[in-house]
Every structure is written in C-alpha cells, then in structure tokens.
Image (cartoon, rainbow, N blue to C red; front, side, top):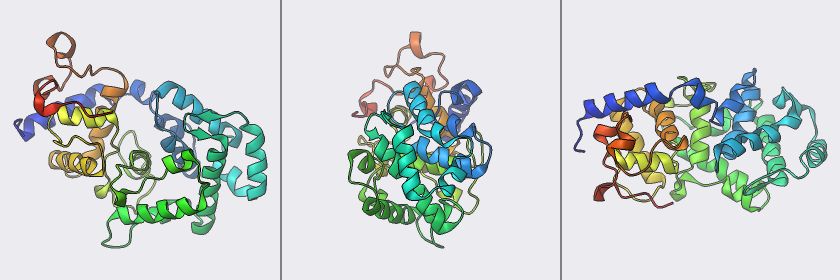
Length: 290
C-alpha cells in the first residue's frame, strides 16, 4: 500500500464525518428497523430489511416497509401469536401482489415463518442460532443456519438468493449487513446482540464498497467474494482494531448516494475526503466487475 496507514485512516475518518449523518441514514434500509421501539421488533424488521437490501435504495425501502406493514408496530408479537397456518393465510391476503425484484410474497411469508420457527426454538430471536461456539469461526455458525434454511425454505429463486454460504466462498453481503446491524454497538447500528464476537464481524461487501476499496488500496482482488470481504476487513482492522466496520457506512454511502463517479478528476472529486489517496483510473484500481 503506497499510502501511509496514518494518512489513510485520516482520510477515512474524514469520510465518516461527511456521511455518518441522519440524512444518509434516512436513505439506508437500517432506518426501517430503527423506526421500531422494542429490540425484538427491531430484529424482525432488520431480518427482513437486510435480506431485501439490493437494487435501488428508495424503492427497496418502500418495498421493505410494505412487507412489514401487515405486522403492525409489534411484528415479533404478531408472528408469535399466530399459528403457521394463520400466518400464511394472513400474509397471503395482505401481501397479495407484493414483490421486490427476485422476491415474491411467498418468499417473504416463508422468511417470516423461518424467523417464527427459529424464535420458538431459542425463545429469544435469532442470536442463539448465529452465536458461534467458543473458539469457533462465526462463519461456521452462519453456514449451519444457511444450510438449515436451505432445507426448510421453498426452492424458489428468492429463497436461494437469500441463502449464500460463507464456506462456499460467498461474500454474504446481506447476512453480513444483518450481523453488523445486530452486533455492532456504534452509530448507526442497533447493537442488540451482546454475546456475538463483534471483533469478528466481516464487512458487508457490495459493489460500492468493493470498488472504492480498490481505489484506496484496501484490496487488490478483482472478484467481490468472501476473500475480498475478509481482506478489506483486515485492512480496516489495521486502521481501527477495535471497530473496523465503523467505516462501512461511509464507504457504501459514497457510492449509494452517487457521489463517486468512478473516474478520478479534480473537477468532480477534489471535495471528496478520499481524493488524495484514491487511485481511480489507474491500472491497479481497475473497476470491479458488476
């Protein structure tokens, strides 16, 4: 890495100052979960929002809100109080016609039913199902849950899209996002799960994070997969050993909000906190394939 660690950290800290704002958060799916009051209701909302978090942000947030609307202000109680048959009948009626890109109303009903079953088993939501055993890589726990859900959820494209396995090399962006929201205690995350090893969180790798990370030398990989996600996380951990994922929100929103043109020009980029450390346009920072 040609840039010094101190310089890169300073530039990323500046990026956080710019994007860690209420305005940016309003354009993030986490805002849907934050609108609920009780921790378990926030978990249900986050479980839905994270796994529908793909595509254009504004219509995606509307789709998540519409998906959760039939469950009212207390979605956890709504799911707990209904039998599986009642849940299916109610959602089949209230969500008739609902869809978000790869996901149908049937996919969503199955996803909510999965939360209900897992919660009934643990008695306290999903944390126990993603909690690694002592000295175990958390990805083993995530893989176990993914493999279980692959057998229990319908074999639809929407369900398969929600169930990448980290042990198969997937970046698992939506699962990583859900875990960041639930575990990390700093702004803007919920920090509801206190037993999960926060220091082992892996960055939710989307197109924006992958592209900008190459521009500033956090990774040299070209394929946005699990290995790239871990490489970026390790690079950020060298800058902030306690809380490397504090940079994720700003890195992603630099792209989500359309502020990174992908080609480095003073006229368009000079105001960006990363301008002096960005290598956009150079051979070593070739664009990530979409």
